[in-house]
Image 1 (tube, rainbow, N blue to C red):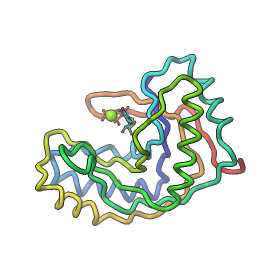
Image 2: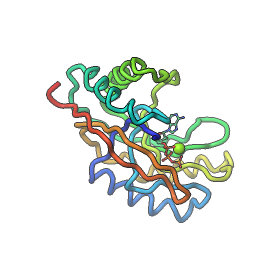
Image 3: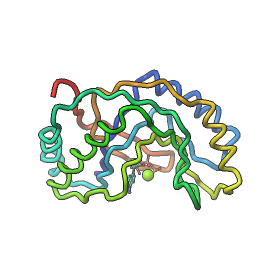
Length: 188
Ligand code: ATP
Ligand code: MG
């Protein structure tokens, strides 16, 4: 199964971005906007994982979390990734308690590495993906796109009290996610 670890958005944030997505869909048809139900902040992409590897991985993550505390995050800026060259991802960049979030991701990486997963070497860039390009978007459109997205930013800040292990089912009509486990961030 295809798995990843992510923070799911609370209802208020989800609704905020659902409105943004509805309004961005019409003018920007060359972008495949995500389904609002799928909005998340990816912490670690695990890829294809065997069924029997899931329980040990969950245990290792639980054990690796050292006094995790809830985090306050705020989506506040447009991220068009990569910054140069062919645009692939349209996202809301995250501010707030990003350093504690990095430490959390580091603990997750250590747990996953201990279970045989490859460590992510690209720097962690917290973001909520809103859309992916389906055809090349001219670089001259980047400014207008960022501007249109900025109309919905900053989004409300939210408190992260848990993250989830999610199974992704890829499909022609968009991916479908199923939450398999929850990792609370309160009380250590
Ligand atoms: P689709 O690929 O059909 O657009 P999706 O991206 O929603 O669907 P997945 O590809 O399963 O679904 O990805 C799940 C999450 O993991 C997303 O946040 C995605 O950006 C992230 N992700 C996917 N592949 C990688 C990768 N190779 N490295 C890092 N993150 C990834
Ligand atoms: Mg994908």
